[in-house]
Image 1 (cartoon, rainbow, N blue to C red):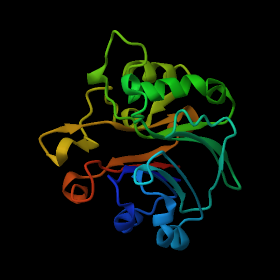
Image 2 (cartoon, helix red, strand yellow):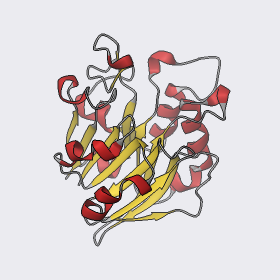
Image 3 (tube, rainbow, N blue to C red):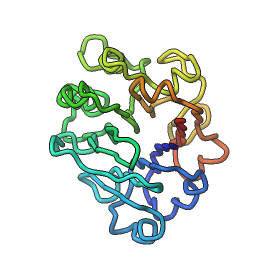
Image 4 (spheres, helix red, strand yellow):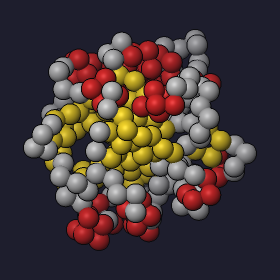
Length: 236
């Protein structure tokens, strides 16, 4: 199973051919246009798809390009507009996918990683059940920006998930520490000298133990399309 998460920085209808060359089974796209503008993509490529957001130009799109089917969980809380719990199924397996774009302008003091913190606490029971989980997307966060005076910073989120045996696939695969990543996923203003790692795929131990590869898109290949690089995770 190959998962790709990518913040496409809008206008996905003009960019999807580039990501299709990577042959994902499941694709999670942040800052994705509403499906009304993606009919040529969904009609020709997607076996199943969902979209969420408060801005029709910058939501979260989740697309099955393989044999997986999606079901939005009844527990979905629209207060966390773009942190979405989805049951993913095929003939062999079921798992929970949390599609994430951590950006809620209506919650000004808790706009970014705090949204993830609130969501994982709200979905605590779902994260405790027997179905493996994957939390994937743009977290808009890194340990280097921890605000120690406030509960719900990046390290709090990582610790909360680790207690549930859910780890970052990138950090596990490359044996790197949070906040000391060698491969950026985002370039501020698209400047190569302003790199940050803010996109993640956290996965339950059932998936972590089956990682085949993790890769981050290269600046030279993707910067003309977006300030974010796609992250690709392949599970055996």
